[in-house]
Each structure stands twice: as structure tokens, then as C-alpha cells.
Amino acid sequence: MSDNPDQPLTRIQRQNRQIILQGALTAFSTNGFRGATIDQIAEAAGLSKPNVFYYFGSKDEIHRNLLTGLLDMWLAPLVAINPDGQPLDEVLTYVRAKLDMSRDYPRESRLFAYEVMRGAPHLTEILSGRLRNLVEDTVTLLRRWMDEGRLARVEPHHLIFSIWSMTQHYADFEVQVQAVLGPGHDPYAEAGEFLDQMYRRMLAV
Amino acid sequence: MSDNPDQPLTRIQRQNRQIILQGALTAFSTNGFRGATIDQIAEAAGLSKPNVFYYFGSKDEIHRNLLTGLLDMWLAPLVAINPDGQPLDEVLTYVRAKLDMSRDYPRESRLFAYEVMRGAPHLTEILSGRLRNLVEDTVTLLRRWMDEGRLARVEPHHLIFSIWSMTQHYADFEVQVQAVLGPGHDPYAEAGEFLDQMYRRMLAV
DNA sequence: CGTGAACCTGACTAAATGGTCAATTATCCG
DNA sequence: CGGATAATTGACCATTTAGTCAGGTTCACG
Image (cartoon, rainbow over all chains, first blue to last red; front, side, top):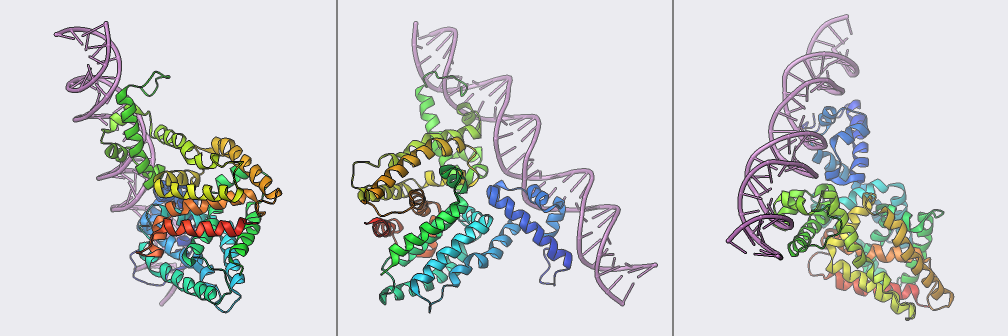
């Protein structure tokens, strides 16, 4: 079945593939690729193990499917930066959107984190292809804004890295954040305020 | 041997334990705890597998040993903040030191990252104990400096998180940084400049 | 309703992996 | 030197785990 070229999927196929991917997302994002087992995935999906293999040919295929399938969603906020908007607003909106994604989709954040940390074997072409181009476009835009004096000057690549690292930190290192903050804190609310303040000071002209 | 109470270690014991821990650091930091195998560790250490077990009772024990053994080194820069120094200088020095650690000890950075991401089963007590206290002390100091008007006001916990996330990003997500920057960049040199600029603007009074 | 395709599963395999142990070799020290 | 202790290892075990397969069940649709 999984070696079907591109016949349209049946209702059950669409359904079960989705269910499996959801279970796999939970498993992979909790334990990493090697740490997650097909049994876990099957369990989380409520299907038998052979049935999982009926829909996906291998553990690897599930993983690749997840990564590429979620990439668009993950990069959407970057694409959404409006070249005709107010520079500072656009950056702050991007930061906000990225932080919201960490809050609302921590599993996805961790999935990507695990993959990049282990050397991104399933993402290398994308990292140095599509992602790199996307970043390059944004860098060009940011540099233009800086040239026009509408944004304080910093190295744009590293500005982007800073946004990625700080927002995803709250999802990927949640345990640490919780442990250090202790109870009675709303990490994402506080982080939102902090990041807003921080990027305003850094980028205001 | 590994169940010896606290007899002094022989020369060979000291040596081989060290060699094993180095091999394990490489293995764990590359593939995570579940992804690393004893065979890999033995191979990297140049010892036979049973011999590895002669020095450490289990894979878990090696891992725990590594984590706790490296913790002091990892937290040293935070401890080194001088309450009597110039506030901004102290923070910038801390940032610099943390960035240098990511550059010089990327394996250690990844080891901790993997551990925290999988829920820190071997670090929970430390995270909410010693680490938390250390952070709390630093937070108090930072707040005092802010009260005295010697540092711009931001939420100190999140200031610390920002330093952790941004510096460790360059070690943990090295593949992504390299892929996005492309050749002809010195990530750590650029990051040093960027972070200096960033924290100056954020914290200058 | 009937039939062929789609869907599902119990029982299995092969390989990987954490860990053990009896037996051998190296080292230390009186 | 010689015996005791430390260090080492080949061969092994039990479990886990990715993946298979023959055969059974359910579904879509004419």
C-alpha cells in the first residue's frame, strides 16, 4: 500500500495515516527517533503494529513524513513577514508568532530539535536549500530596513537565530524552565513580555 | 568493582574510567541516551564491552556519572559572576564565557540538551535544587543592580534563559547554523559580536 | 447480495542490545 | 619469585525491537 505511486487515498487511509502520524509525533517528540518504538506509536494510535506497517513502510518513513509534513506550518511565520509593514512591528509579530507556536505545538518544536541535534539526516537538503533561501530573503529584507534607518543595525542571520533559539527554548527545555521558575509562573506570558521588551530595545532606531 | 564503597581507585581504574567517560560523552552527545550503545562506547574507548561493565555497572550509571561530573564545569561561569563588579560587564562576561563553553565543549552542551529534552530523569533534583538556588541568587543580584539603576530593568529569570538558549543554540543546533549561514562564516565570532551588542542595548541604563 | 479489493492481525523472524560469567592474563607487592 | 588481587575477554543469555507474512475480516460498489 505504501508503495502506491499516487493513487487517491481512501477515507480509511487518510484517517489512519493521520492517526499514526499523531501518535508518532508524540512518541518521537518525547523520546527522539531512536528512543521511540513502533509499539509505542501503534499503542498511541490505537492500532496493531502490523497495521502501522500497512500504512507506512518503515519507522524511517513515518519520521520523514512527519518532518516534511510539518515543515510548512513551522516556517509559516517566517514567510508571513510583510515587506511593506512597519519593520519593528513585523519583527515583533514574528517573535510573537514563533513563541505562540512553541506554546501551542511543543511536540513539533521538539521533533525538529531532536532531528537537528542528531545531525538532521532527514533534513539536510531542506536546511541548506529551502530554509536557507527563506532565511536569505528575510536577511535581505532586514538589511534593507536597516539601510533605510528603520531598524537598528545588527547581523540579520544572528538576529534570526536569536529568535529561533529563545522561542523554541521554552518548548524544548520546558522541564528546566519549570524547575527553575518554580510554581506560580506562566512562562509563556512572561516570555512574551520579555521578548517584546528585548527586541524593542535592540532594534529601535 | 563499581560496587566498591569508596576505596581509593588504582591508577588503571582512574585512567580507564576517564577513557570510558570520554567515549560515552561522544556517544551520548551524538545520539542521545537511547541512541548510544555500549558497543559504541566501548569502541570509542578502545575497550571490550565486558571491560566497560567492569568499571561501570550499567549504561545508566555511566550516563549519571557524566552528567553530575560535568555539572560543575557547566555552571562555573554562573558562579563566577562577581557581585562587586560592574553590572553590565559582569553580564557580558557571563555571556562570553557561556558562548566560549558552547564553542569549546559542544559535546557537553548536547549532553545536557538531550537530557533536559527527554524530561531530565537524571537531573530533576538538581534542576529544582542546586540549579534553581544558583539561579535564584543570580536573580536577586540582578534585581539589586536594576533597583540601583545600574542595569536596565528586565525580568531576570528570562534574561538568564535568554543567555542559556542563545549561547547553547550554537552548539546544539550547529548543523542548522552551518547550513543556513553557508561556508565562509565563523559562527562563534559573529555570535560573540552580536550577543555583546544585543545585551548592551538591552541592559544599558 | 456477492465479490474483489482494502484492511487487519496473531504469530513469527532476525538483528541489535544491555548485561553476565567463567576462565585467562596482567599487575602489584611482600 | 610467587601468590593474591586487579584487569580483561570470548562466549553466552534474555529482552527488545524493526519488520514479515499467511490468512482472516470488513468494506465498497456493481
